[in-house]
Amino acid sequence: MRNSQLIMKRDSFPKELDLLLAYLKLEQDELSHGRQQELAIDMDWDRFIQLVRHHRVSAIIYNRLKNANHPWIPTNVLEALRNEYNNNVFRMLHLSGEMESICKLLAENHIHALLLKGPALAFDLYGDISLRTSKDLDILVDIHKLDEVNKLLLEQGYETEDIIQTLLNSWKWRKQHVAYFHPRKRIFLELHWRLNPGPAKEPSFNELWERKKLNALTSYPVYGLGEADLFCFLVSHGARHGWFRLRWLVDIDILTRRQIDWTSVSLFLKKYQLTMIGGQALKLASNLLGTPLNNEMETMANRSRAGLLAQLALLFINEKYDLHSNPPETIASNLKRYLFAVKSKRQKLLYILNKFYPYPIDAQTLPLPKSIHYLYFPLRPFLWAWRKAKDVLT
Image (cartoon, rainbow, N blue to C red; front, side):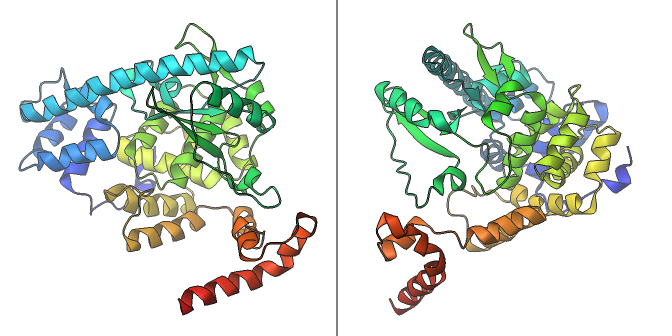
């Protein structure tokens, strides 16, 4: 491996984050233990635990530390991690039971479903649902089955406040899922019809179903994405969120170590314009977690643009902000620029063209009969300008 070509600047990382990364590395030896002991000197352990929680890696960190001979780790730190681990075990068992029930219900109604994350992904990657955290179930179905699945979920007691506001059927590609919540079971569920929000090219549900992989977690057969599709999904998901949780990179580290058909992965990445973010993910995993890269992976990771995108993501990894929950203005501004930078040229063009496609707010600004909704296309720039002017005046 040409390590000199894979080095990124990470001088600004606090020692608590460096220690967390040291424990997340799969390969552990005397040298790495010495480095961990050195980092532990004058460690802010409260901050360390906060970072573990923020990056959603408490389960895997506790699993690696519980039997390790690391006397420099305070007892209260291990106790806090043990409590997090135990709580996660119960949560994942609860989710697993519901996951099996929902998949069985859909199958009995002749509806194919693919599990994207949750306990199924934990079992697929780690072989143990206790080693990965998850707060909800993510289920992908064919877009033509959405009404049927929605009806079944409501009959099971799920509720949703996701009202799809749409104009000219734009919801089909602008959105990717609807969120549900079961008030009695306290379970969140996301019903997907796309892997990622559009506009972007991605495989059809039928293509994904043909390449599906049986998951052996439950007695009733449930299915997830095939490994090449899973890699593409995980890198696109992580890139879209700025990799601000290390859990997503740990997933990449685990998956990359398998005997994957990298020819298929490369073809899929190229077909769906994900090559650069695939390289970004591999570069980050290699640098931060010591993920070994073969020649094909190195070629992808060593591209200059992949390196630039990886460097940009370090900002969000280094900051302890949830990018979904109103981060500071400077972080939000950096995220906006980053999200445009990770797009391919074609995706950037589609993104710009998307701005000219009518939004539901245009119909609120100027209601028109459905028969002439096509007029929102030429009217959109004027309606946008009207709203901006109105905001300035108020």
